[in-house]
Image (tube, rainbow, N blue to C red; front, side, top):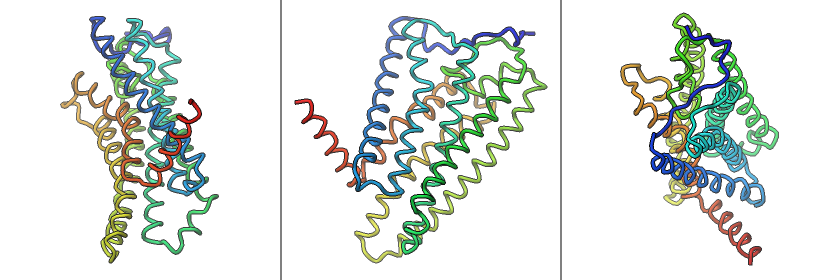
Length: 311
C-alpha cells in the first residue's frame, strides 16, 4: 500500500514524450490562455469604465469574466510550465490549491449562470418590476451568494478529497489535479465517502439546471408573444449568448464528472477536460460580445483609446 502520509508531490499527465510535441502543446495552450486573458480582461475593463454598462446584466458578466480568468489560470499555466521544463511534478499543496481554486471557480460560475438566468427572466417576464427586484443591493447579494457557494463547495470537496488515504501511487492521469482522477488513487473503502459528496453536489447542480430550464421556458414563451419582430430579435440577442454559455458549461462538466466508468479512457478524459476546463473561458467573451451591440461599441471605444495612448 502506498503511504499517503509521506506523499509530498503528484505526477501530472504529460501530453507527449518528444520535445517537439511538448513545445506544440505549450504553444497551443499559450494561445488559448492569451485569448482568454485578453477577452475577459477587455470585458472587465469595458464594463468597469463605461457607465452605460453599469447594469445588472453587465455586472454579472463582469463577475463571470473574473471567474473565467480564475479557472483557466489555475490549470493552464502549470501545464505549460511542465511541458516547457519537461517535468510532470506538482507539489502536494499545489495540487490541493488547484483542486480548491478550480472547484471554486467552476462552482461559482455555475451559480452565477443561474443568477444570470433569473436576471433575464425578470427583465423579460417582469419588466415593470425589474428596477425594484434587481436593485444594486440585490445584485451584489446575488453575486456574493454565487461566490460564497463556490467557496463552500470547493472547501467541502478539497477537505474531503485530501483526507482520503491513497493506495495507488501518486500519478494523476490528467494535466491538472482533477478530483475524479484523484479518486483512482484512493482506497476502495474511502471512495464511497467521496461519492456521497459528489451526489450532493450533483443534486444541487441539477437543481440549478432545472431552474435555468424553467426560466428559459417562461422567457421564450414571453418573447414569442412580443408583437414586434425587432423586439423579439433584441430579446433573443440578449438571451441566446447566455444560453449558449450555459449549454457549453453544463454539457461538458456533467459529462466529465457523471459519465459511466465504461466510457472512461485516458484519451477521452483528456479531451473532455480540455473542453470543460480550457475552452469555455476562452470562448465565453466571444460568445457574449458577438451579438451584443452595446458591449461591442464599448470594446471598440476601449481599443481605440488604447491605440491613441500608444501613439
